[in-house]
Length: 282
Image 1 (spheres, rainbow, N blue to C red):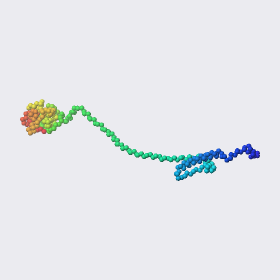
Image 2: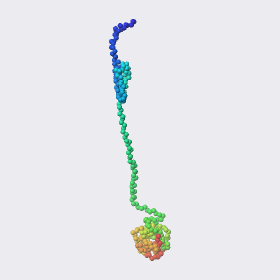
Image 3: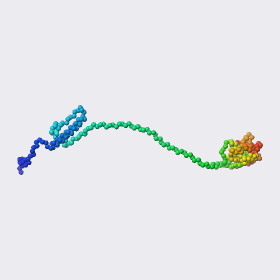
Image 4: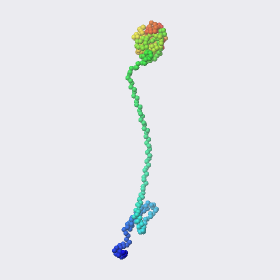
């Protein structure tokens, strides 16, 4: 089939009227974007120039009129592809104020804490036991020491008389009223006499006294509980004469009937100087 002629084709589809050199819509959009980009660049340049020293003159950006159309098209094309990055505006940052150095706190000296002293509990006074009777005195092998009172000062020893025999109590367990007799000297407790400083003659814890408190010639001598208020218990030792005299009766210690046998009882008698009245006292 033969190709259509140009004349027939033009007649059915005539060409559009020529608009001359008026640019299209895309060209105007490109130019608008270019102008906006230039304005942004110009503003950024102005801000940067303000930060430069006064001696340096800022370089002026070319105006859109000075740019050639080809350059404007190239810038518009670049603006479509790459969006311009906005440069952050540099602001004058004021230096942060340095915190004032505070003086270091001086450690507070604390007074040493005194540890509590544990107080010892006060000793409670011991309760005094109620008065109890004194326990019985321990008895020796020889019972003569029973009922012996507190010791008194004075020499202690044998009272030796007639036939070199000693004055002795009648028993190992004497009591008030126990009599005395003459016996061989053996140094037993029954023969250990104390010539006390209070004027008494003591043996086995008792004092030499007179039977029944009598003072007559021939009154037997006996033992009695010592009592310093009883004058009848006081005796006077006359060492030069060898006499032992009762102070109240004013009579001498005597061996009855001058009998030298063991067991002869003792008494007081008028002082006559006979051998039955001579004694050696400690």
